[in-house]
Image (cartoon, rainbow, N blue to C red; front, top):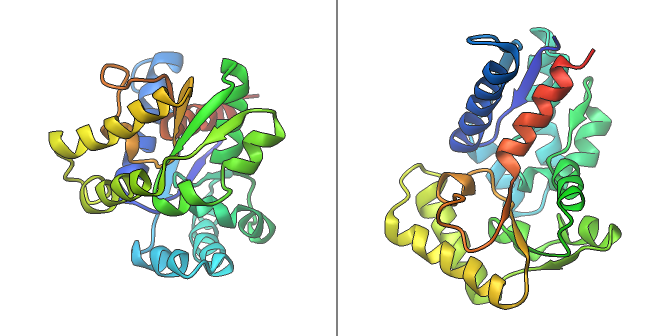
Length: 229
């Protein structure tokens, strides 16, 4: 099996991704069996400071410093369980000594596989307002829909103030569910949870729409790649 390297950005997103790999591996390979997994992360602010000023070359450099460390301890390929960091994916891939699975690519492919036609995009403000998912979805004839500016502010605030720090509440979760309901009313048939922490609060039981859990999807694709002959 291939050695999975996780170039982490946030604690919550990386932890969920790691746990999903191990959980799914146990179901496929047998109890307590999973590929070798290594995780490295710099202090979160090293990424956020650069994302705020859209210094994606700087983001790529930070990620590649993680990737180099993972390569030194034997990782065969890399996953980056962070959506917004994928604004720097092309630069990161160019610098990387190891192959990288793109969370955007696997997500858009899954939307096609599921037959979704009109997909809402959630995440931090940077993800919702930019072209991270918009252009890739349009290229495969899927209609992307982003929340209104007011709704984006609600989701962004909940993520940064509650979910990413690891302290979501019932009330803040309801705010995000309200935005998903609005997307449903605008004709969306599904939604992309385009922040790796969103699956912590959005579940099959509470969501008004079917969704793509980008965190667990990336984990499953990494596992598939790791065990593929």
